[in-house]
Image (cartoon, rainbow, N blue to C red; front, side):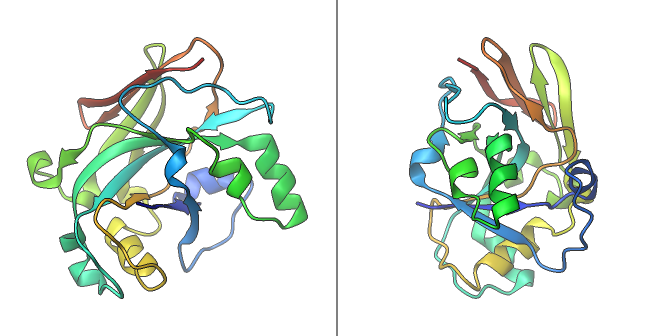
Length: 205
């Protein structure tokens, strides 16, 4: 199982990180399997950086083997969706960017990919380009998104990454975060929603 993730896929998020580039193709990075945080387990703040940000995202899970998938057929290669948190060591990321180095250390560390409860796409009864999601911390909404704001749609992302990676059953794709990212701190309680359904809930330790 592998985790593929998309960076800078919402215009307002790009602006809040002072990145105003027009991206003709998705920016892709990976996370190892050890990054997965599931079943409501707490996120333990590591000690190798000073600031760890939440990035709330729609995540899809691949359901069949695929390579070089045409975008018009991409919807056939996933049938489950959830909300995930792409935790980012922000100060470390800034250092890596300045040096022109890869993002692996700031994005792929253990527990950096929190995964919610999987929901069948047909159960949602909604177009994948019309999904609403949000994150609450201690009962207060801190980030919300709508997939219609994506620069690159979910199907476009699936088709694009399949040109480089053979997609296998169980692979996950984080599709990018909207504006509103921010730091987490000890003893906070995070709850994420897909439409009005709570799919992810855990504590920060």
